[in-house]
Amino acid sequence: MSAERRLDGRVALVTGAASGNGRAIALRFAREGAAVLCADLQEAPLAEGWDEGLPTHEAIAAEGGVARFARCDVTDGEQVRAAVETAVRELGRLDVAVANAGISPRSADLIVDEPWEQYERVVRVNQHGVWWTCREAVRQMLAQGGGGRVIVVASAAGLVGTPTGIDYNTSKGAAVQLVRTLAGQVGRYGITVNAICPGYVRTAMTRIIWDDPERLARVSEATPFNRLGEAEDVAGAAFWLASDDAAWVTGIALPVDGGLTCV
Image 1 (cartoon, rainbow, N blue to C red):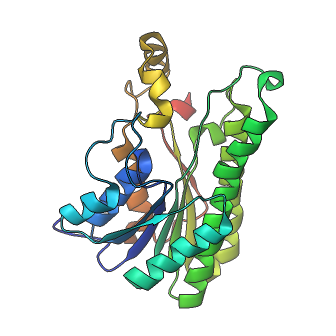
Image 2 (cartoon, rainbow, N blue to C red):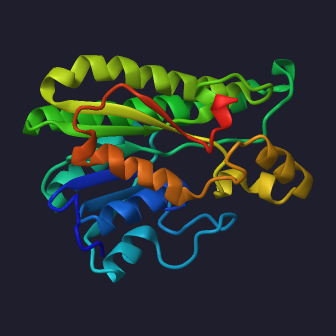
């Protein structure tokens, strides 16, 4: 565990915590002293990703941290509310909420080739799921007083246009606008609301890129930093937004993309 533990005494909820960015965020928060409610559809990391070992909440406990697991489908408001209630009941309160859960199915080159059913599912998870997570987290933060931090994991695809994936890009653009609007609503209550917009990060969601050497090289060359991201890069940004250093930062959409959106 971190010697400084800058989130000591705080309680965080992380959706999509079993794998990828969510797992890295939950682990980083715990190493900084936070108690973490890990919410996901399943406990174990996704088999198609690079995460290995114990489920996230068990990995935190093995390192000496405090964590719980709540099975949660973020498209179901009752399940999201129950996850928040579990955090409060078992860990004491809610100080930080990370709306990270999301999906990215194979994209279509043209809108006419994008199935409505796929579009609808992506929007339910990536947009409506964020709405539910933010709504129930803010409800709890208002009830307990003392402010709070809401962090949404959006995407660089929510900031710039790309030629494929209208379903995914639309949902992430909506998440960014939700953050900007919500920040204006709840700032007077001491609650900050910010988005992280990752570029290409090595997770199960982007496995298709890493399994295609030509595509991997092409995407890497388009990133000025000359490397693609790791989940720990996203976790570092989330930690900063949850820390006291970002106490006066709200309503931003922070690219964590190696410079992808600046060119």
